[in-house]
Image (cartoon, rainbow, N blue to C red):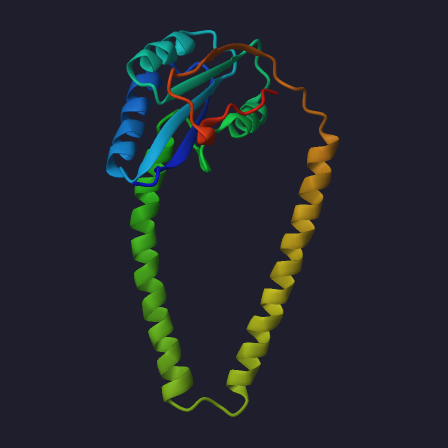
Length: 201
């Protein structure tokens, strides 16, 4: 028996993005086609757009049952949109992107930058290895470097824990209003335990 593919949710908060919906979904379909070992769903949260964003999404949902749409009664804010997306995602993993197509442009630029940085760090590592190991560094220098890196790592770990603590305090004191869902567009598909409906906010 062939095991089911893992479901990936691509979540997209939208507000007045009518002109971007069709090209955006075209890009998302291209990503899904390039990774056929996974199943995908495209989950949109519409923050009560005043243009034809919801109508465009409804049209795309008629053509592609991977498109899901949640529309709010009013604008509850970008962060609430993202939270609602994650709470209603059915996939085992969720990826949040922006609707203005800038995400795809940034990914292309970052890929080029990563290639340049990889070459730079490879060269830097080579020269460091040559001058510090091959050419006999001063006695105790290697120990000093290891201790410095170890202390820096410990400090970074504690800063990360402090940031997590502060972040939880911030989330618990914001009193974000729960969004009220006005309309939903859900695909009609056979029941799957993996796709049990997530609770609404």
